[in-house]
View (cartoon, rainbow, N blue to C red):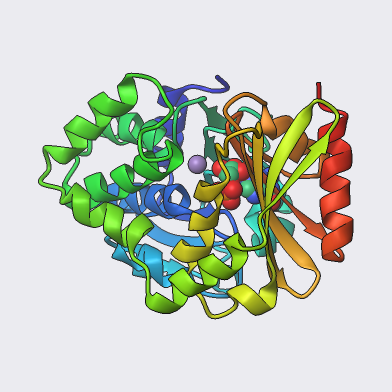
Amino acid sequence: MIGSYQACAELLEEADYISIVTHLRPDADAIGSTVALGRALELIGKKVTMHVGQNHPVPRTFLTIPGADRVREAHELPTDQDLIVTVDCGSLDRTGAISGYLHSRLDDLLVIDHHASNTGFGSTNLIDHTESTTVILRDLIELLGVRLDKPMAHALYAGLMTDTGSFRWGSPRMHELAAELMEHGLDTRQIAVDLLDATSTADVQMIGRVLSGLQVRETGNHRAAILIADVETISGHSHAAVEALIDFVRALEGTDIGAVFKEQVPGRWAVSLRSSSLDVSQIAVRQGGGGHVPAAGYTTFGTREKIVSEFLDVLGETP
Ligand code: 5GP
Ligand code: MN
């Protein structure tokens, strides 16, 4: 753990005007953390703006989280706030289009995060290796003297559910917190449908096309299940459907790692890695990315042959 909850709460209490920033290509923990903290700060009288580190809007899937429509793009970040808080960003570069500006505001930067790889790039840091950033915010919101309400509970639950792979990994605390959040009257079935399960016919057909190209590749002591989702196949499809691809390869029999290569624009790939026996964060870090032991990712560039062979090279050198 880096920093203290008390110091973090005091810094937030002293500021009047606060901007909250989360990572590019946000997930539900990123958006849930942003809007839960934003709402808590507004309830104690702060002026708040919320931003994602990219210049295109938040995927529609996340607009089901109450208040997510308030999260603005990077280019709308004001410059006259007293304090900037990053949530769920493991490193400064994860703030994407905002990272250049944040370099000039490092003295006013509070970092709240749960990534083990985060070394603390703010002037004040609260880095606790919890299941999700929303787990940290649950305690921080209490320290701020704010009573949880249904919209905040929904946002916190969204991050907890998705960052634990729907409660597959984490400590016993994740279930206790889920129970506490459910007491606020959450429709957890609907939240799961909204964030994870909702699909269209076209999305299922896209998933079928990607799955039909499944490869199992052997290198060193490892066997990887690999899916390649090129831009032609996935463009126009829902964020949730594309992100669901990893679930088909996270534990394929006879393999010890699953990888999905998602081509966002021609030649630029977002890579998701999952394993229940390897530390995939180490592989991701070697490729310039990051993440957690069971789930990590990175961004890479090139042809499909190049990106797969680079991945296999790194995997082959992994003990
Ligand atoms: P996902 O595969 O769901 O996109 O990401 C899994 C985890 O890997 C996330 O929690 C995030 O921390 C990390 N991650 C994914 N992509 C990147 C990336 O491009 N850079 C870094 N630093 N971390 C990433
Ligand atoms: Mn997270």
